Length: 496
Ligand code: NAD
Image (cartoon, rainbow, N blue to C red; front, side, top):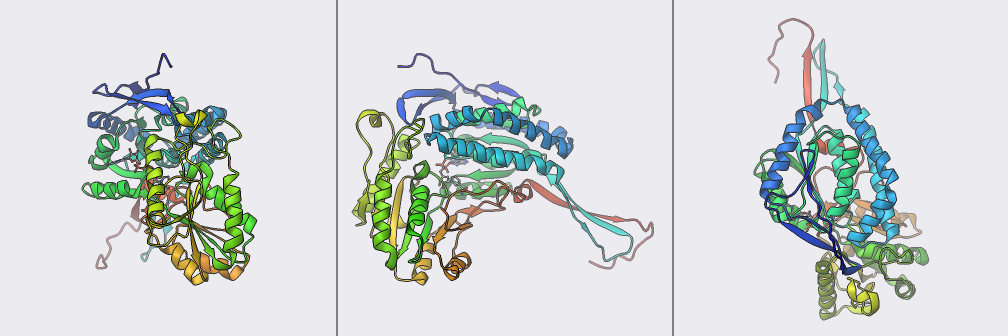
């Protein structure tokens, strides 16, 4: 039994403050729900408005700070984060549940994004464009938008906020950041890094609390000029609609149902490793997780044998135990959702070949652990083939040939990432040309991406300009064209 639970605050206008209504909520460790990790502000509309006002006030000075200096602030944040890698990793594991090695990987990704984006302060380039007229200079400028909102999910509580906040700031915007309600501790640690890096008051504000109040206010408040959102397709769709009322710029990265195609000529050991990593790493709670595998008939028997053996060898346990391959789900809500999907798959006639149960006994009783689960005999119409599960559950479908495999892989409303395992160049190229997903992998898992490379999905997985890399700056700036006439004479202005 814990005696004292620390209370954490919002960060508004450079100060740590309680919510106006004084409401708080408590969070617990997903590996052991008897362990409280803190109390956080259950903020409301008033708190969101105060943060927007603070961001608005700070905008003029931040915007006129030279971009390379804004980049320097990000470099200082990068350097401080580098000193705090272990602290960040443990915080992520403590509140989200992922194995500590995955958490360290997430911190590394955040560092890479910060490092790359800091340099963008020296590269906020415009174009010079040749004019149809003599003695006329045409050039473009990239200008910040103003107050921007960053709304993030719980599954990458550090990397996703960083890949939104960093390009927003370096472009000269101010930010109101609303982290997922279940992962505010990592968000607070991130804000502290920026504070210690010397970011001026009001440039970055953070408000914890429900999407229905804080998130809704950010999506509808006329002073917010843009929203960068990552989360479920359902929420993204709502935000897109709500933000249209005030014509905000919107960027949504949403759900996935990512498929791996395994051809007859694939290196099956490599394919099994890739599928297992993709499906069960971070307990399947990645937007790029492998949720479906489409196996060519000729490879099916040996592939399934190897897949089942490798899956049952995975060690499930608390994220802080270095031997753990698969950690708990991040919350009771996630646990209930995933168990519901498993029950539905059984009801619809999919064949369970591994896992399928909540883990019980000993330390498993206190946490939200589910066995890595595989269903074979999945038909395209089943819910397990169509709905995002966001847990350690894999659906196996069989295809006669590559044409059918592509049809099955593309049979989804989502289109985030995908992969093929093959040793045939023609099949790899067919896949690269036809697969309907924003990030394609050949002979590697559906996961991840690099910090300087565009990231995002097609179909109902992504909306708006891509995140990360140089594209991120496009979202957080707008382009202004300047025509400068230096003839000093009156011109014939009969052209359009
Ligand atoms: P979610 O949609 O429930 O919540 C995401 C964020 O939106 C949270 O901060 C939440 O409080 C906020 N929110 C909820 N309702 C809102 C509203 N009406 N207005 C404004 N904000 C609101 O998603 P989640 O459960 O936190 O995250 C899991 C989802 O995120 C999965 O679908 C996953 O695929 C997706 N995801 C996508 C990517 C990607 O890059 N495509 C990356 C990670 C996660």
